[in-house]
Length: 514
Length: 105
Image (cartoon, rainbow over all chains, first blue to last red; front, side):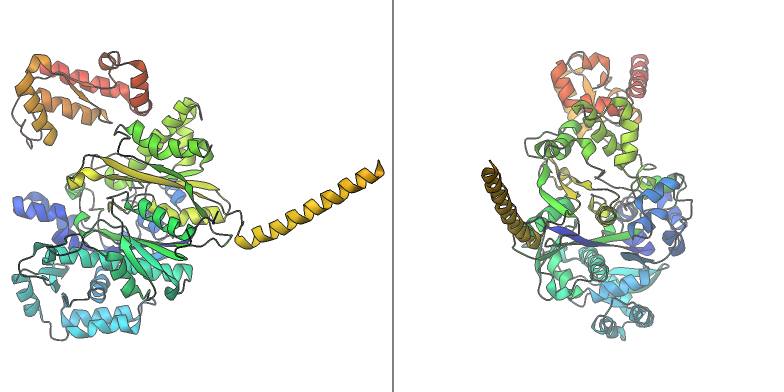
């Protein structure tokens, strides 16, 4: 049997996009159509946080790796009105990019001259990005094409069906439509897709830095976001993965997109680990960008309750899955849970299929898994919106199932939730929270010996696409690497031969003695 | 929204005497909201039951009236785990309050 793939590293990035909340968030876009004079739209700008506040928001600092998930236990809930002990832009495995630079990155990520930036704005962005250690001269040079773009020229683009890019409400750029008739190539869709690609690119660049991988050695990239790209003849044709890999400079890679709403990252990771374990590829990257439509998604609830708009960042992540190196945590592609077509939709059926069925087959109890990571949504965002504390609800269900299986006593349930669970820190960007944010911290905890086994659970709501009412999900287990690489097993074989030889000698000696 | 439409269709087909609505919401508040919607009308005025009082009896799956009607093994297999997780007392209290309101209306 070939060896399990390992998690070599992960990167996590955020882009703070305050103007995009107002312009491009689906809640706000819809409100402008159905109720343009609404109180909500009037109040909204007052509820948008500053870049500094976004930097000093503890869940964001956990996301980019400057704080550990368990550090959130030390901060009294809610978190939005507390300052994190760290507030840097640069994280251990990513960054929180400000909006102006992100517009520049959108242009760098645009292959069809659809993104235009006002000349002066572009010059200042170019200066900033030139200081960013991850962008090459070739990247930065893309910003040289803006000299002729005045505010009037950009306004003309917007008037012709384009989408404006704003900074403090001022028009500083625009995304043109990519076709006169095809809605799939409208400016709105192109803006969503380019923003998604740009956030994925940012994460890929940080992945190179975080893992030290030579970009030429990446064989395959899998995108697991929630956008679709294509034209009217192939609306979801793809391929975000290869498009982002091109900008990140993975010259020897191809790729493809995996989709299953919020469950997609778990599907993609499983595919990546399987491709590596099968020997098809040596290095596979799983990546995802963020979603402009989800900016301010629960904004009405937040504004109603006097809270800041907490959905103000586009998130991205990338993970490198590689051949077993004997040290990094392994992905147990043989301890896998899946929600089948016939599984049913009751919470019990769902959690059993994803958690206990997989563990049962491997002879493991629920308590044998040190940490579970399912939907790691930040409760600061979901609780005021009436969706409760999603991670906690998952841990309660997993624990309750453990009680039913006899793995723990009912009175141990609260302790189980604390010990085997975590507080959520991920932005509510659909696919982003789904297990994936824990991969980085999980790798570190396993390598440091803090834990030895974790389970990643992806869950998705397929009904949103109106093709099926089914739920979806897959899960897998990550374990400490016991260092049984190919080389050591070859040595073991020799050792075994030696042991047999010695045993034969001993046996012969004992016979002679008799 | 879609559920409201379906409840209304069932109501038109079977009538108030032949229909009980069973909900499985995770919290008392949301379960109560569903009960209010099918009893007194949609309080958010967003769906087809806005301003329409069907007076349908509504119970949560964890309430004893419903639990006792279900085969114990099936119940344990489908609901046992969630029963342990949910605040059943809070749900029962909320649902009863709405049923009382519907009875008085």
